[in-house]
Image 1 (cartoon, rainbow, N blue to C red):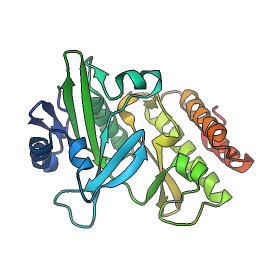
Image 2 (cartoon, rainbow, N blue to C red):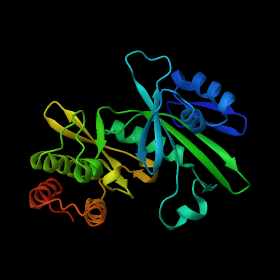
Image 3 (cartoon, helix red, strand yellow):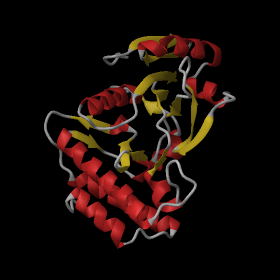
Image 4 (cartoon, rainbow, N blue to C red):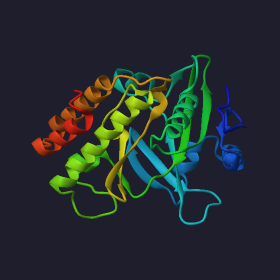
Length: 261
């Protein structure tokens, strides 16, 4: 495994990976005690369960005052391979944590808001496969775009979002998609669960997640494929939940992406 810039190598029994220098001692001590970071998070009395692709957990950030948290996520397969491989990946090229750490730091350097990667660990699973965990900083208060639009959750409030707030959230995701394209970050799996919505000084803002399949290049990348992928995800949620976004929200999205889809 190659260690991305800004990280140091860490090891455990049957585990290897990288961590920010300030997190390295905690990672190695946790691996020594629990074997995997995901197992440690499951057994943390203070963990907050979050729903993503499977359950991920936000744990208190070790040694940090002020209630900061880290999100510990086990990589899980999606699509038709999920029932077969579940959380196993083929050992070929860069591992998922390596890809995500590199893409995340490249995105942040280009002004694209995304949670900071803290650590990534790979666990060999036989001669051909591996499992992996990723640790990132927890963004709070926040909800993912799908929960805001289709489950009436608003960050930092018990009240459901208004039609104007739903449109603003979708516009924020659209603007961020355009920013990514201009900055040369191509996200192959952009969907409504890959955006966090937070409250900014001027209203709702978006953060992009799950960059293990993202690619950073030196030139701008096409906006249309990413906007179309997000549109398909939103249409699918409309179908599965029975909740229609409405013309105001769709118009805000089209304005933000320049009608790219």
